[in-house]
Image (tube, rainbow, N blue to C red; front, side, top):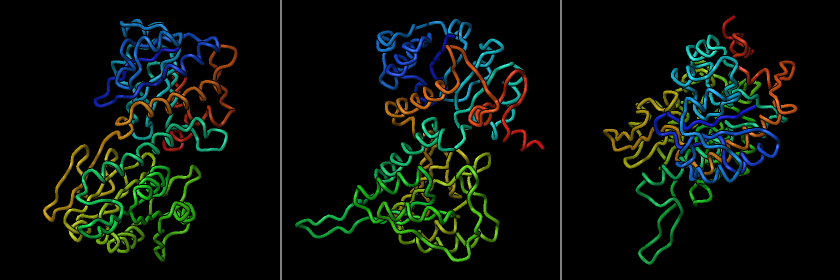
Amino acid sequence: MIIAVPKETADGETRVALTPPIVSKLVSAGLAVTVQKGAGLQAAFTDADYEQAGAAVEADVNELYRHASVVLKVQKPTSAEIGKMPPGTTLISFLWALSDPDLVEELKVAGITAIGMDAVPRISRAQTMDALSAMSSLAGYKSVLLGANALGKYLPMLVTAAGTIPPAHVLVLGAGVAGLQAIATARRLGAVVEAFDVRPAVKEQVESLGARFIDIPGMEQNTETSGGYARELKKETQKRQQEALGKHLRNSDLVITTALIPGKPAPRLITAEMIGNMAPGSVIVDMAAEQGGNCELTRPGEDHFTDNGVIIRGPLNIPAAMPIDASQLYARTIHTLLKHLVKDGRLHLDFEDDITKQATITHDGKIISPLLLHSKS
């Protein structure tokens, strides 16, 4: 069984699927690893590092794919990359299958066994395979730094000879993994933080980090999916939520939005009218920009300056801004998943196992994912 790690081809992607320490563990377990030349350079891992860990380094990407039993990637593959994989190859990467039916069909027709790191179920025994949470934590941390960099104020209170500077007020919308990390980071930097989430159950977590939780009366009760994500709200509930959050936005210097719904566009939390009431110099960092944004005026991949002086940042692929730690964390989740799937040096897919069944998108020319099959019915 040969594990292949190609260089990522997506624009702006700096991460690599395996790091040298994880390569060393796989080689010690009797697996062969081949890494494309230069695959880890943007994450500060050299070819020599991989060779020292026991991997072979291959300059010819066609040869890399041709001999691979398992291909490990970060981003979902292009059509050209799928075309390089022989039928029966196993691909493990982020796939976002619910949002990309064309990719699923292409993988199915090509006879690729595709396993989505984003489809690993959020259950207790799969926590160490949870690449989404690992990447979300990095993104939550970085989002505060991106916001602070654009904000024309200190985050902490400062007492100086020239007078006292009050602390900045930070509002975090969405208290999942990314939101909680954003709260913790903003608090460590000295800001006054408040947060909102449609799931009342996270209130205790928010308050344990030193932030104030915003309670909105009349919210829906059943707001969390079995996978721990927020459910899409009814239109009247969304309107009530926006009205209640409007006054908090007016008093906030930095707003970070993190709300996502799997397989659907990001929910609209902040309207143009709400932005029009914010103070000049306020900053919004929309972490949901890749899925359309939580903010009506977000421009994915751009910084947008509104007519009333609000700065809206729509960063894409935030974890790629921290490729060293992001690659290390991603590689660890991949390693744990491989330990779950590999028996006696061979890939063993047991579809009676919930982790394997949920994470596998296509196999043997068929769609396996229960989520996809349910969405088609």
